[in-house]
Length: 170
Image (cartoon, rainbow, N blue to C red):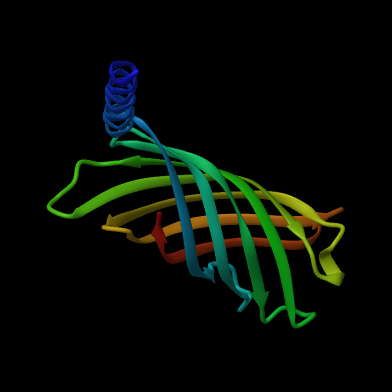
């Protein structure tokens, strides 16, 4: 009985060590992100947009990640005073080699935005973005270009903007 118990302990220990080693070597890992940002409109309107987004996805090796993003985009200085849009998008990032503790990346978003507030709640449209940024430890910063359209029969919000985002990854 004692030999069987010792054999089970040895097998269990070997199994756990192997599983931990595989986990360390696995090229696919969970990656979550939270971003805060502001978008400056490039059109003549003086409308700005605050952003709070999260991306949940996977990191594949050292140089690629993909995930599903969503959040809140609050347009201020609109005719109605403020509008809220919920974007839902696919995010893809390509990471360049690390330089000391900093890793540059290129990012692309593609999806849809859905109006929430009274004046735009029946409206929806595309949202697209391209950005460059850096990751240092768990923190990230990026600057990019974003197009968001939330319209119905030609009326609504069509927004081209420069975006500044800061956040962290976990």
